[in-house]
Amino acid sequence: MGDKYGDFLQALLADDLEAMNEYMNDVALATFSSFDTGKKPSKSEPERFYHGFVLGLIVEFSGRYVLTSNRESGFGRYDVMLEPLKAGGRRYDHGV
Image (cartoon, rainbow, N blue to C red):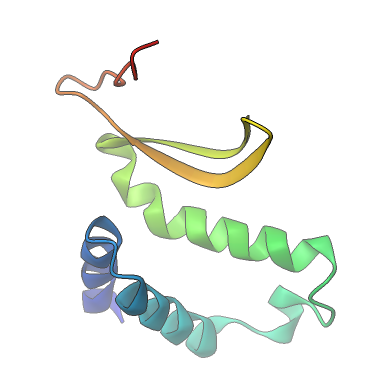
C-alpha cells in the first residue's frame, strides 16, 4: 500500500475523487476495526477517528500548504482546509 500513498496525494491534487476514495477504502478495509470506528455511526467518536485519519493522510502537504482543521468559516465549520503557500512559506493573503 506504500506505493499507492503517492498516488493518493497526486489524486488529491488532481481532484480525482474516485482514486482518492479507492485508496482510502483500501486502507480502511485493511486496517480499521469496529473498535476504531464504533458500532453506531451517529455517535461523534467515529467522526473523530475518520477526521484524524484524513488529517494523517494529508499532513504530507504541510510544507507546501497551510493545513487547518475544524475552523469556523462563514455560517458554519469546515472539516479540513489546504491553503497553498507562496514561495518562502508565506500564506496567500486572499486580498484581505
